[in-house]
Image 1 (spheres, helix red, strand yellow):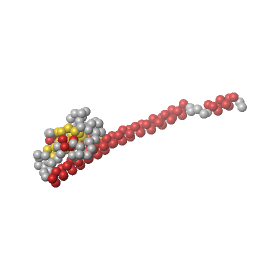
Image 2 (cartoon, one colour):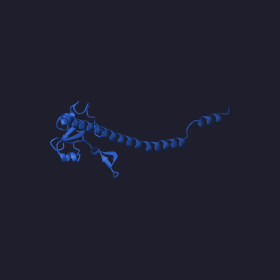
Image 3 (tube, helix red, strand yellow):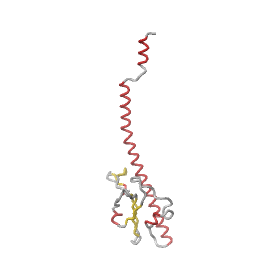
Image 4 (cartoon, helix red, strand yellow):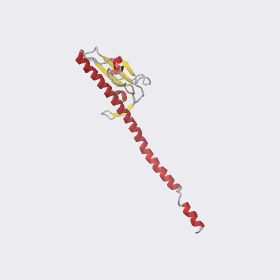
Length: 164
């Protein structure tokens, strides 16, 4: 066998620089498409988790109101009762996905509850306002975060976590 044929046979087994660049371009395009989708999934998961927690806690609060109406005067749970396991919730209130906190602040001003004010988002996960003296009693539970969610209002604007 001719030695130059052996060199050409070995050289053909390697990738050329153009083939490597083409593969890198394809991978870059795939990454450019996949990475934004990943962040969109993460944002949607946060919004869904927040809505799930809010739904569960609000259901527990409504159940407490129903039970109290059956046994006497209808009243929402106080902030202490909300935090006591087995009274309103059977498990601890989960962490707020937007700030990682599960602490609940007792809000005492109706305007703050109506506007779903966010205060101290680095130390408080959730806010709870209750007024059993009003007729009818009022209770509002909301996320203590003003981060935008993937949920859109009727105008197409992103809803903040405290407005879920």
